[in-house]
Each structure stands twice: as C-alpha cells, then as structure tokens.
Image (tube, rainbow, N blue to C red; front, top):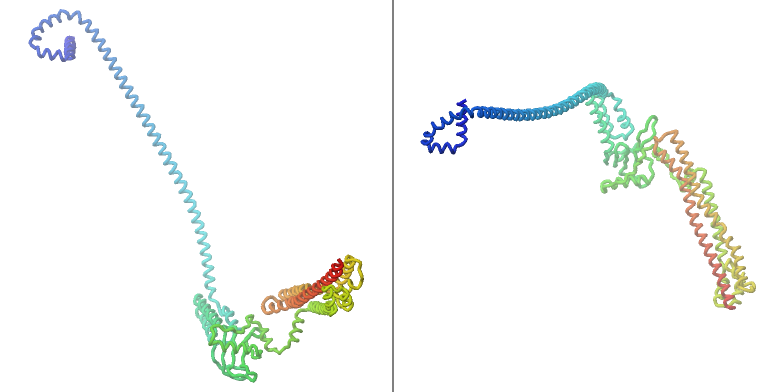
Length: 523
C-alpha cells in the first residue's frame, strides 16, 4: 500500500512539472525538510489511509467503468466495422451474383444460338446432300445428253435440203464440206464436241454462202446456145445473167434464176422468157455495177413459184384485158358499183344540159336588164316577151302583168321561185347518194373478200406468203373501184350544186332588179 501511495505521490508529483523543476533548483532545502515530512506522514497516515483506500476503489471502479466503456466503444466500432464489412461483402456478392447471372444468360443465349446454328447446319447439310444427289442425277442426264450429241447424218438434213433447193452455185465445195462432217460423225462418235463443231462449221459455211454477192464474167447458156456475158448471184436465193450480144429486138439476152414447182420439192431454174421491161432493168443493173455504190436489182422477195409460172406463161395484154381482169377480180359487187357510176354520169349529163338550157336567157334577157337599169320600163316589157330561160321567166312574170302594188308582184315571184327552185335542184340528191354509196359497196366487197381469204388460210395455212398477198389485193379491188367511182361523182355533184346556186342567184337578182325598177320609179 505504501508503494501504491508513494507511486501515487510520485504520480502526483509528476503531474506538476513546474514544482519538480523548482525542487530541482532548490534540492538542498528539500533534503532538509524530508524527515519532517516523513514524520508528519507517519502521524497522519492512519487517518488518511481509509480515505485513500476508498478513493482508490472509486478510481479503480471508474477506471474499470471507463475501460468497460472503452471496450464497449471498441466493441461497437468492431461491430460497426464487421457490419460494414458484411454489407460490403454482401454487396460484392450481389454484384458477383449479377455478373454471374449476366454471364450465365449470355452463355445460355450463345449456347441456344449455337444449337440453332447447329440445327440449321444440319438442315443445310441435308439439303446439300439432296442437291448433291440431284446434281449427280442431272450430271448423269447431262452426260447421257452429251453422248447423244454424237448425232448421225440426219443432223445435216436441213443443210442438205437447203443446198438442194438453193441456187446451184458452188455445189462441189458445199457437198465436200458436208461429206467431211459425215466422215467425222463415223470416225469420232465418242467425241460429240468435235462432231458438233463440224456441224457448226458446215452451218457457218452455208450462212456465208447465203450472204455472198458477186458479179463475174462467164460462159452463159441460153437454151442450147453459149454466149459470153455477166452473171450476178445474191446469196443462195437469187441469180441473174445477161449476154454481151444483142438480139434482133435490140435487147441483151437475159435470164433470172427463180424457184419453180418440182414434182417433190421446189427447185431453181433459169427463166429466159422475160418481158422487155425486165430485160431493160437487168441491163441497167449490169451497166451500173462498176459505176455506182448502190444498184437496184429486180428480185422476187417472196421467193414463190408464181412468178416463174407467170414468166413461163407470159403473154402481152392490152388495157381492155387488164380492165376485164380488174373487173373479174372485184367479184359480183363490181356490177352495182359500175351501175352506180353509169347512173351518176347519166344524171349529171342530163342535169348539166338542162341547166345550160335553163340558164341561157338569150340576148333579150340582157337587153331587158339593161333597160330596167336605165329606167325604160316599156322597152324592158317589150324585150322581156322575147327572153328565154329561168331568168327570162322571172322578168316575164313581173313585166307581163299590171300588178297593183309591189306586194302582189313579190307574191307572184315567190310562187314562181317555189315552183322553179325544186326543179333546179332535182337530181342532185341522187348524184350525192351514188357518190356515198359506191365506197360502202367497195368496203362490203373487201370484207367479203377477206372472209374468203380467211377461209383459204384455214384450209391451206399461211405457208405461201404470195398467196396471202394476192388474196388481200383481190379483196381490196372493190374498195379501189368504189373510191374510183365516188371521187368523180362527188366532184360532179359539187359542180352541179354550184351551177344551181349560180342560176338561183341570177333569178333572185333579176327579180329584185325588176321590182326596184318598177316601184321605186313610181314613188
């Protein structure tokens, strides 16, 4: 206890450093009073010992309480730190859990996508296998077709047919090309490409032959005679030749190579029975071959056999024969069309003569009008009795009777005009009707001809273009005839209408002149 008290004293001394310093300075005096202090302490010690023990206990309790508070505070801090660490760990765990869930979801989506892609790839593989099987099947089929290209000579039938039916030029060269292809077909049957190339080369050679044109000097055959001359070939479809000599008619012998009807097929032959006009055209062609860049060649573009037949059966015809043939081609409707034309001309002639007579008033009519213009009514009355025609009739109607007034004279003129004007215009309607009916009849004939042409097409087809062209031309003959009739009749109708209008105007003018001369003078 003493040690503790001493320690407490020392501690008390240590709490006042300024005193310790003072005592250090006054060390000697402290040593003097030390025994005195010990004695006093010994005297008072028992009395203060109890008090000191109670203070020490209180201090211990306070210290323990403070230590407990400090421990509690420390425990609270540790608890708070533990709670904070726990919450931080929980937050970290939540974040890691969220990251794990996100990664898990992404991984799951990737796995699902990969599974879908795997299923698609399996489907593509299945489809590819099916396509491969189809390709193999098609390859086998193509291989079989490829081997089937090794055709025989029947592939050349079209070229051979064209060669036989074409103009007989370069026959040896063209036959040699086709024979070469036939040999290759026999030797290289396992090489379809080579055979196809040979066929194409033969076709190209024929195509080249069809577009070749040229003029050459050669020995020409005209019947049994041989002559020097020029020969022209246009492809494989046409040729013509002309001798250099001149026949008794002053023309060069010429011939055209045209298709003719054979027993089994169409063939070409030289046609020498040409018209003089055709021979002149051929001579003009050969005359301009070396001088002009363009030459007009008479060619039958339809390549029909009818031209050969026409040339073989060619005879000179007159205009009467052409007219008869034209009338025959028109058919039955040509009769009413010609009848309308004849009736229209007849009515025109009759009406024209009647108008000439009706409009001729003679010299007395002119003298009457001059007398009225001069105001000599008596002389006008005397001359009007000798006047003729419709104008003279108007003058006689007013001057021959003493009318009481102008109104009565006008009524007499109105009666005269109402009776004479229909006579003047009679017949004009018929000419107009004929002019408008003729083209309608022609159109009817064309329709009938087209119907017959379609019947022919139904039966025989459209293999011959010239047959169709001829049928159409025959069908249009009636329309042509109708227009030939309608146009002049319409012109003649207009001419008659103008003549009638002129006569009516002269009558009206004469009537006004006589009325004005009589009643204006009286006024």
